[in-house]
Length: 80
Image (cartoon, rainbow, N blue to C red; front, side, top):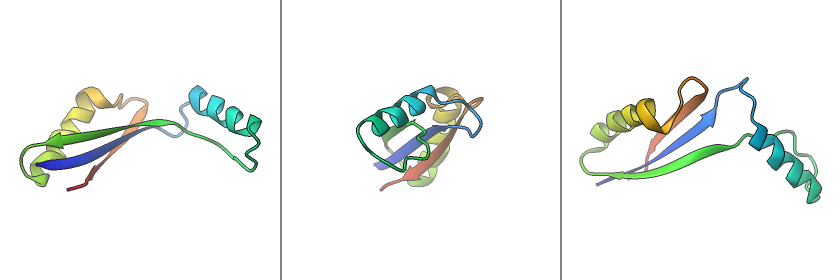
């Protein structure tokens, strides 16, 4: 079994209203020095098979479902 983590984030230049709301919330809670906040998604996926096969399969999953590649980037990290 292979465990992996997929992190999906908005591309630079894409507006992030949720990140702005979080930034404002942190400021209202008294956290100083916050320059900016960008939000994203994390998927932990377990797959049968080798890590090499998993990377290819995960990239395909990202391209087809997990990420909107027009506005989002993704990174795949094999954990085990």
